[in-house]
Length: 445
Image (tube, rainbow, N blue to C red; front, side):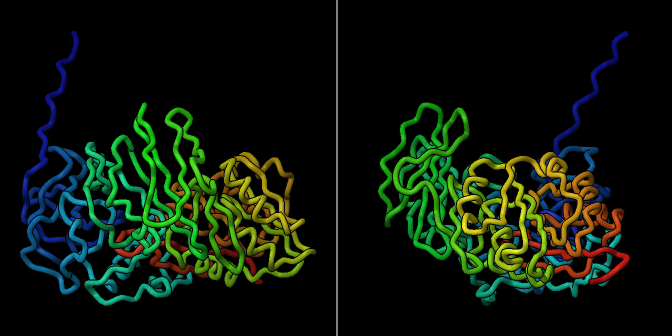
Protein backbone atom coordinates (compact mmCIF):
# COMPACT_ATOMS: atom_id res chain seq x y z
CA UNK A 1 0.00 0.00 0.00
CA UNK A 2 1.43 3.35 -1.05
CA UNK A 3 2.04 5.86 1.72
CA UNK A 4 0.07 9.07 1.69
CA UNK A 5 2.16 12.07 0.54
CA UNK A 6 3.26 14.30 3.39
CA UNK A 7 1.33 17.48 3.92
CA UNK A 8 3.28 20.49 2.59
CA UNK A 9 4.70 22.64 5.33
CA UNK A 10 3.16 26.05 5.81
CA UNK A 11 5.27 28.90 4.45
CA UNK A 12 6.11 31.55 7.04
CA UNK A 13 7.22 34.16 4.51
CA UNK A 14 5.72 37.50 5.50
CA UNK A 15 5.16 36.54 9.14
CA UNK A 16 6.48 39.09 11.63
CA UNK A 17 7.98 38.48 15.08
CA UNK A 18 9.16 40.86 17.77
CA UNK A 19 12.56 39.49 18.79
CA UNK A 20 15.67 40.21 20.82
CA UNK A 21 18.67 40.10 18.50
CA UNK A 22 21.55 37.90 19.57
CA UNK A 23 25.13 37.55 18.30
CA UNK A 24 26.40 38.18 14.80
CA UNK A 25 26.71 35.13 12.53
CA UNK A 26 28.78 34.30 9.45
CA UNK A 27 27.09 35.75 6.37
CA UNK A 28 26.00 39.27 7.30
CA UNK A 29 23.16 38.62 9.71
CA UNK A 30 22.49 38.17 13.42
CA UNK A 31 20.84 35.29 15.28
CA UNK A 32 17.47 35.59 16.99
CA UNK A 33 14.64 33.21 17.89
CA UNK A 34 10.91 33.31 17.33
CA UNK A 35 8.67 33.07 20.41
CA UNK A 36 8.41 29.31 19.86
CA UNK A 37 12.20 28.92 19.63
CA UNK A 38 12.77 28.68 15.87
CA UNK A 39 16.11 30.18 14.78
CA UNK A 40 15.96 33.41 12.78
CA UNK A 41 18.89 34.74 10.75
CA UNK A 42 18.07 38.47 10.71
CA UNK A 43 19.60 40.98 8.29
CA UNK A 44 19.63 44.74 8.89
CA UNK A 45 19.85 44.18 12.66
CA UNK A 46 22.64 44.54 15.24
CA UNK A 47 23.38 42.49 18.37
CA UNK A 48 21.39 43.59 21.42
CA UNK A 49 18.61 45.29 19.50
CA UNK A 50 14.89 44.60 19.78
CA UNK A 51 13.32 44.54 16.34
CA UNK A 52 10.32 43.41 14.37
CA UNK A 53 11.65 40.73 12.01
CA UNK A 54 9.73 39.82 8.84
CA UNK A 55 10.39 36.34 7.47
CA UNK A 56 11.80 36.30 3.93
CA UNK A 57 12.50 32.55 3.60
CA UNK A 58 11.36 29.48 5.50
CA UNK A 59 8.50 27.33 6.63
CA UNK A 60 7.12 25.70 9.75
CA UNK A 61 9.49 23.07 11.11
CA UNK A 62 12.50 24.28 9.13
CA UNK A 63 15.88 24.26 10.85
CA UNK A 64 16.01 28.05 10.55
CA UNK A 65 14.27 31.01 8.95
CA UNK A 66 15.68 34.06 7.20
CA UNK A 67 14.28 37.46 8.01
CA UNK A 68 14.75 41.23 7.68
CA UNK A 69 14.52 43.69 10.56
CA UNK A 70 11.74 45.96 9.27
CA UNK A 71 11.23 47.99 12.48
CA UNK A 72 13.85 48.79 15.10
CA UNK A 73 12.23 49.10 18.54
CA UNK A 74 15.40 49.44 20.65
CA UNK A 75 18.45 50.51 18.62
CA UNK A 76 22.10 49.67 19.27
CA UNK A 77 24.49 52.54 19.95
CA UNK A 78 26.38 51.25 16.90
CA UNK A 79 23.44 51.87 14.55
CA UNK A 80 23.42 54.71 12.02
CA UNK A 81 21.10 55.58 9.18
CA UNK A 82 22.30 53.69 6.13
CA UNK A 83 24.13 56.20 3.88
CA UNK A 84 23.09 54.34 0.74
CA UNK A 85 19.50 54.96 -0.40
CA UNK A 86 19.33 51.46 -1.90
CA UNK A 87 20.27 49.62 1.31
CA UNK A 88 17.63 48.09 3.55
CA UNK A 89 15.04 45.31 3.69
CA UNK A 90 14.11 44.05 0.24
CA UNK A 91 16.57 46.34 -1.51
CA UNK A 92 20.13 45.87 -2.87
CA UNK A 93 21.91 42.82 -1.45
CA UNK A 94 25.46 44.01 -2.07
CA UNK A 95 26.14 45.48 1.38
CA UNK A 96 25.41 43.88 4.74
CA UNK A 97 26.41 46.56 7.26
CA UNK A 98 25.46 49.97 5.86
CA UNK A 99 23.49 50.50 9.09
CA UNK A 100 26.53 50.01 11.37
CA UNK A 101 29.31 52.44 12.29
CA UNK A 102 32.64 51.60 10.59
CA UNK A 103 34.30 50.54 13.84
CA UNK A 104 31.32 48.37 14.73
CA UNK A 105 31.50 46.67 11.32
CA UNK A 106 35.09 45.64 11.92
CA UNK A 107 34.26 44.49 15.44
CA UNK A 108 31.41 42.33 14.14
CA UNK A 109 33.66 40.82 11.49
CA UNK A 110 36.26 40.03 14.13
CA UNK A 111 33.63 38.25 16.21
CA UNK A 112 32.71 36.12 13.21
CA UNK A 113 36.34 35.17 12.55
CA UNK A 114 36.87 34.30 16.22
CA UNK A 115 33.70 32.17 16.30
CA UNK A 116 34.67 30.25 13.16
CA UNK A 117 38.18 29.60 14.46
CA UNK A 118 36.84 28.26 17.74
CA UNK A 119 34.01 26.19 16.29
CA UNK A 120 35.77 24.69 13.27
CA UNK A 121 39.44 24.60 14.31
CA UNK A 122 39.27 24.69 18.11
CA UNK A 123 41.53 27.74 18.16
CA UNK A 124 41.28 30.82 20.35
CA UNK A 125 42.55 34.10 18.89
CA UNK A 126 45.59 33.83 21.15
CA UNK A 127 46.37 30.33 19.85
CA UNK A 128 46.13 31.70 16.31
CA UNK A 129 48.54 34.54 17.05
CA UNK A 130 45.81 37.12 16.46
CA UNK A 131 45.04 40.11 18.67
CA UNK A 132 41.39 40.14 17.57
CA UNK A 133 41.54 43.32 15.51
CA UNK A 134 40.34 43.70 11.95
CA UNK A 135 42.52 46.21 10.15
CA UNK A 136 40.98 48.72 7.72
CA UNK A 137 42.67 49.23 4.39
CA UNK A 138 44.75 52.36 4.05
CA UNK A 139 42.48 55.33 3.37
CA UNK A 140 39.29 53.57 4.51
CA UNK A 141 39.03 55.24 7.93
CA UNK A 142 35.99 57.40 7.24
CA UNK A 143 33.51 58.98 9.67
CA UNK A 144 30.23 57.23 10.41
CA UNK A 145 27.73 58.07 7.71
CA UNK A 146 30.35 58.18 4.95
CA UNK A 147 31.20 55.31 2.62
CA UNK A 148 34.64 54.54 1.15
CA UNK A 149 34.50 54.15 -2.63
CA UNK A 150 36.63 51.07 -3.04
CA UNK A 151 35.11 48.51 -5.37
CA UNK A 152 37.12 48.53 -8.63
CA UNK A 153 35.02 45.78 -10.23
CA UNK A 154 31.23 45.98 -10.19
CA UNK A 155 28.89 43.59 -11.95
CA UNK A 156 25.58 45.25 -12.73
CA UNK A 157 22.46 43.25 -13.47
CA UNK A 158 20.05 44.64 -16.04
CA UNK A 159 16.28 45.03 -15.73
CA UNK A 160 13.86 44.03 -18.48
CA UNK A 161 13.68 47.65 -19.64
CA UNK A 162 17.47 48.04 -19.83
CA UNK A 163 18.33 49.76 -16.54
CA UNK A 164 21.51 48.86 -14.70
CA UNK A 165 21.12 47.75 -11.10
CA UNK A 166 22.27 45.29 -8.46
CA UNK A 167 20.76 42.02 -7.30
CA UNK A 168 18.57 41.96 -4.23
CA UNK A 169 19.67 39.67 -1.42
CA UNK A 170 19.37 35.96 -2.37
CA UNK A 171 17.29 36.92 -5.38
CA UNK A 172 17.44 37.28 -9.15
CA UNK A 173 15.39 40.46 -8.88
CA UNK A 174 17.21 43.65 -9.80
CA UNK A 175 17.30 46.86 -7.76
CA UNK A 176 17.78 49.69 -10.30
CA UNK A 177 20.27 52.28 -9.04
CA UNK A 178 21.58 55.69 -10.02
CA UNK A 179 24.91 55.18 -8.26
CA UNK A 180 26.72 52.51 -6.23
CA UNK A 181 28.33 54.24 -3.25
CA UNK A 182 31.05 51.62 -2.76
CA UNK A 183 32.07 51.67 -6.45
CA UNK A 184 35.53 53.12 -7.01
CA UNK A 185 35.75 56.48 -8.72
CA UNK A 186 37.08 54.86 -11.88
CA UNK A 187 33.95 52.70 -12.11
CA UNK A 188 31.50 55.50 -11.28
CA UNK A 189 32.97 57.80 -13.92
CA UNK A 190 32.04 55.28 -16.63
CA UNK A 191 28.38 56.20 -16.12
CA UNK A 192 27.05 52.65 -16.47
CA UNK A 193 23.83 53.56 -14.63
CA UNK A 194 23.01 56.32 -17.13
CA UNK A 195 22.81 54.09 -20.22
CA UNK A 196 20.18 51.86 -21.75
CA UNK A 197 21.43 48.25 -21.67
CA UNK A 198 18.41 46.61 -23.27
CA UNK A 199 19.26 43.07 -24.40
CA UNK A 200 22.03 42.64 -21.85
CA UNK A 201 21.84 40.21 -18.96
CA UNK A 202 24.70 41.88 -17.07
CA UNK A 203 27.37 44.56 -17.45
CA UNK A 204 30.65 44.35 -15.54
CA UNK A 205 32.72 47.52 -15.12
CA UNK A 206 36.42 47.34 -14.25
CA UNK A 207 38.70 50.22 -13.24
CA UNK A 208 42.29 49.03 -12.95
CA UNK A 209 44.52 50.08 -10.06
CA UNK A 210 47.72 51.87 -10.99
CA UNK A 211 46.76 52.46 -14.62
CA UNK A 212 44.03 54.32 -16.48
CA UNK A 213 42.70 51.09 -18.02
CA UNK A 214 38.93 50.75 -17.98
CA UNK A 215 36.96 47.79 -19.28
CA UNK A 216 33.32 46.82 -19.72
CA UNK A 217 32.29 43.18 -20.08
CA UNK A 218 28.86 42.57 -21.61
CA UNK A 219 26.80 39.42 -21.14
CA UNK A 220 23.99 39.52 -23.71
CA UNK A 221 20.69 37.70 -23.46
CA UNK A 222 20.34 34.87 -26.01
CA UNK A 223 20.08 36.31 -29.50
CA UNK A 224 20.55 39.94 -28.42
CA UNK A 225 22.77 42.33 -30.35
CA UNK A 226 25.52 44.20 -28.56
CA UNK A 227 24.90 47.92 -28.05
CA UNK A 228 27.27 50.56 -29.33
CA UNK A 229 29.21 51.39 -26.17
CA UNK A 230 30.06 55.07 -25.93
CA UNK A 231 30.88 55.87 -22.33
CA UNK A 232 32.16 58.94 -20.54
CA UNK A 233 35.81 57.99 -21.09
CA UNK A 234 37.93 55.61 -23.24
CA UNK A 235 37.17 51.99 -22.41
CA UNK A 236 37.80 48.54 -23.88
CA UNK A 237 34.78 46.31 -24.40
CA UNK A 238 34.52 42.53 -24.07
CA UNK A 239 31.58 40.19 -24.43
CA UNK A 240 30.71 36.85 -22.86
CA UNK A 241 29.82 34.16 -25.38
CA UNK A 242 26.38 32.81 -24.47
CA UNK A 243 27.30 29.26 -25.51
CA UNK A 244 30.85 28.72 -24.35
CA UNK A 245 30.99 31.28 -21.55
CA UNK A 246 34.30 32.51 -22.96
CA UNK A 247 35.16 36.21 -22.96
CA UNK A 248 36.01 37.80 -26.31
CA UNK A 249 37.27 41.22 -27.34
CA UNK A 250 34.89 43.64 -29.05
CA UNK A 251 37.29 46.58 -29.21
CA UNK A 252 40.26 47.91 -27.27
CA UNK A 253 42.73 45.86 -25.24
CA UNK A 254 41.56 42.40 -24.14
CA UNK A 255 43.12 43.02 -20.73
CA UNK A 256 43.67 45.64 -18.05
CA UNK A 257 46.96 46.49 -16.36
CA UNK A 258 47.05 46.31 -12.56
CA UNK A 259 49.89 47.50 -10.31
CA UNK A 260 51.09 45.88 -7.10
CA UNK A 261 54.41 45.41 -5.28
CA UNK A 262 56.16 47.64 -7.82
CA UNK A 263 55.18 45.46 -10.80
CA UNK A 264 52.55 45.64 -13.54
CA UNK A 265 50.27 42.65 -14.05
CA UNK A 266 48.20 41.94 -17.13
CA UNK A 267 44.73 40.62 -16.26
CA UNK A 268 42.72 39.46 -19.26
CA UNK A 269 39.11 38.62 -19.93
CA UNK A 270 37.71 39.79 -16.61
CA UNK A 271 40.12 37.49 -14.75
CA UNK A 272 40.52 37.61 -10.98
CA UNK A 273 42.18 40.53 -9.27
CA UNK A 274 41.51 41.88 -5.80
CA UNK A 275 38.66 44.42 -5.97
CA UNK A 276 39.92 46.86 -3.32
CA UNK A 277 42.61 49.15 -4.77
CA UNK A 278 44.84 48.60 -1.71
CA UNK A 279 44.19 44.88 -1.36
CA UNK A 280 46.92 43.44 -3.57
CA UNK A 281 49.68 45.48 -1.93
CA UNK A 282 48.25 44.87 1.55
CA UNK A 283 48.17 41.11 1.06
CA UNK A 284 51.60 40.88 -0.58
CA UNK A 285 53.10 42.82 2.32
CA UNK A 286 51.42 40.59 4.91
CA UNK A 287 52.47 37.39 3.12
CA UNK A 288 56.09 38.45 2.61
CA UNK A 289 56.41 39.73 6.19
CA UNK A 290 55.11 36.39 7.40
CA UNK A 291 57.19 34.15 5.15
CA UNK A 292 60.48 36.09 5.28
CA UNK A 293 61.78 34.63 1.99
CA UNK A 294 65.50 33.99 1.68
CA UNK A 295 67.76 34.02 -1.35
CA UNK A 296 67.79 30.54 -2.88
CA UNK A 297 64.45 29.40 -1.45
CA UNK A 298 62.19 27.03 -3.39
CA UNK A 299 58.58 28.25 -3.17
CA UNK A 300 55.11 27.22 -4.31
CA UNK A 301 52.31 29.63 -5.23
CA UNK A 302 49.08 27.63 -5.37
CA UNK A 303 45.91 28.96 -7.00
CA UNK A 304 48.28 31.58 -8.32
CA UNK A 305 45.96 33.52 -10.65
CA UNK A 306 47.92 35.94 -12.81
CA UNK A 307 51.03 35.55 -10.63
CA UNK A 308 50.76 38.19 -7.90
CA UNK A 309 52.43 36.21 -5.11
CA UNK A 310 54.68 34.26 -7.49
CA UNK A 311 56.11 37.57 -8.70
CA UNK A 312 56.67 38.82 -5.18
CA UNK A 313 58.36 35.54 -4.21
CA UNK A 314 60.55 35.43 -7.32
CA UNK A 315 61.76 38.95 -6.68
CA UNK A 316 62.85 37.98 -3.16
CA UNK A 317 64.29 34.47 -3.61
CA UNK A 318 66.57 35.71 -6.37
CA UNK A 319 68.24 33.90 -9.25
CA UNK A 320 69.34 31.05 -7.01
CA UNK A 321 65.75 30.40 -5.93
CA UNK A 322 62.78 29.00 -7.84
CA UNK A 323 59.00 29.41 -7.81
CA UNK A 324 56.33 27.06 -9.12
CA UNK A 325 52.83 28.45 -9.61
CA UNK A 326 49.74 26.33 -10.22
CA UNK A 327 46.49 27.75 -11.58
CA UNK A 328 43.45 26.11 -13.19
CA UNK A 329 42.29 28.98 -15.41
CA UNK A 330 43.76 28.88 -18.94
CA UNK A 331 43.65 32.64 -19.49
CA UNK A 332 45.10 33.35 -16.03
CA UNK A 333 48.00 30.98 -16.75
CA UNK A 334 48.70 32.78 -20.03
CA UNK A 335 48.71 36.09 -18.16
CA UNK A 336 50.90 34.74 -15.36
CA UNK A 337 53.48 33.47 -17.83
CA UNK A 338 53.47 36.84 -19.57
CA UNK A 339 53.69 38.76 -16.30
CA UNK A 340 56.60 36.73 -14.98
CA UNK A 341 58.53 36.18 -18.22
CA UNK A 342 61.51 38.12 -16.83
CA UNK A 343 62.00 35.50 -14.09
CA UNK A 344 63.65 32.44 -15.72
CA UNK A 345 63.30 30.45 -12.48
CA UNK A 346 59.50 30.79 -12.34
CA UNK A 347 57.31 28.08 -13.84
CA UNK A 348 53.52 28.20 -14.12
CA UNK A 349 51.55 24.98 -14.55
CA UNK A 350 47.90 24.80 -15.56
CA UNK A 351 45.43 22.54 -13.80
CA UNK A 352 43.77 21.90 -10.48
CA UNK A 353 46.16 22.02 -7.56
CA UNK A 354 45.06 18.64 -6.22
CA UNK A 355 45.87 17.04 -9.60
CA UNK A 356 48.97 18.95 -10.71
CA UNK A 357 50.91 19.14 -7.44
CA UNK A 358 51.34 15.37 -7.00
CA UNK A 359 52.52 15.07 -10.63
CA UNK A 360 55.34 17.58 -10.19
CA UNK A 361 57.41 15.09 -8.22
CA UNK A 362 58.31 17.82 -5.71
CA UNK A 363 59.05 16.28 -2.31
CA UNK A 364 60.47 19.28 -0.46
CA UNK A 365 59.99 23.06 -0.52
CA UNK A 366 60.97 25.99 1.66
CA UNK A 367 57.87 28.19 1.39
CA UNK A 368 54.26 27.87 0.27
CA UNK A 369 51.61 30.46 -0.53
CA UNK A 370 48.06 29.32 -1.16
CA UNK A 371 45.12 31.55 -1.99
CA UNK A 372 42.33 29.04 -2.65
CA UNK A 373 38.78 29.80 -3.79
CA UNK A 374 36.03 30.36 -1.24
CA UNK A 375 35.58 26.63 -0.58
CA UNK A 376 39.17 26.35 0.70
CA UNK A 377 41.95 23.90 -0.14
CA UNK A 378 40.50 20.79 1.48
CA UNK A 379 41.90 17.90 3.49
CA UNK A 380 43.69 16.12 0.62
CA UNK A 381 45.61 19.16 -0.61
CA UNK A 382 46.53 20.23 2.93
CA UNK A 383 47.82 16.72 3.69
CA UNK A 384 50.06 16.89 0.62
CA UNK A 385 51.38 20.31 1.61
CA UNK A 386 52.24 19.24 5.15
CA UNK A 387 54.34 16.40 3.71
CA UNK A 388 56.64 18.86 1.90
CA UNK A 389 58.29 20.20 5.06
CA UNK A 390 57.94 23.89 4.25
CA UNK A 391 59.59 26.25 6.71
CA UNK A 392 56.56 28.51 6.54
CA UNK A 393 53.20 28.48 4.78
CA UNK A 394 51.08 31.55 4.04
CA UNK A 395 47.35 30.89 3.67
CA UNK A 396 45.31 33.75 2.16
CA UNK A 397 41.58 33.31 2.72
CA UNK A 398 38.43 35.21 1.82
CA UNK A 399 36.19 32.91 3.91
CA UNK A 400 36.94 32.43 7.62
CA UNK A 401 34.94 29.19 7.72
CA UNK A 402 37.03 27.56 4.98
CA UNK A 403 40.19 28.91 6.58
CA UNK A 404 39.26 27.46 9.97
CA UNK A 405 38.49 24.04 8.50
CA UNK A 406 41.80 23.95 6.66
CA UNK A 407 43.73 25.13 9.72
CA UNK A 408 42.36 22.07 11.49
CA UNK A 409 43.74 19.88 8.71
CA UNK A 410 47.12 21.63 8.93
CA UNK A 411 47.18 20.93 12.66
CA UNK A 412 46.52 17.26 11.93
CA UNK A 413 49.55 17.39 9.60
CA UNK A 414 51.87 18.86 12.24
CA UNK A 415 51.59 22.59 11.53
CA UNK A 416 50.55 25.37 13.88
CA UNK A 417 49.43 28.93 13.25
CA UNK A 418 52.20 31.39 13.99
CA UNK A 419 50.26 34.58 13.23
CA UNK A 420 46.90 35.58 11.79
CA UNK A 421 46.06 38.98 10.36
CA UNK A 422 42.55 40.00 9.34
CA UNK A 423 41.85 42.86 6.93
CA UNK A 424 38.63 44.71 6.18
CA UNK A 425 39.11 44.88 2.42
CA UNK A 426 35.35 44.82 1.73
CA UNK A 427 33.85 47.70 3.76
CA UNK A 428 30.06 47.68 4.25
CA UNK A 429 29.91 43.95 3.46
CA UNK A 430 30.33 40.94 5.75
CA UNK A 431 33.52 39.79 3.99
CA UNK A 432 37.10 39.91 5.25
CA UNK A 433 40.47 38.77 3.97
CA UNK A 434 42.74 36.75 6.26
CA UNK A 435 46.44 35.90 6.09
CA UNK A 436 47.55 33.01 8.31
CA UNK A 437 51.23 32.14 8.64
CA UNK A 438 51.91 28.52 9.62
CA UNK A 439 55.05 26.67 10.63
CA UNK A 440 55.89 23.15 11.83
CA UNK A 441 54.59 22.67 15.35
CA UNK A 442 57.71 20.81 16.46
CA UNK A 443 60.13 23.63 15.59
CA UNK A 444 60.33 27.33 14.91
CA UNK A 445 62.71 28.87 12.42
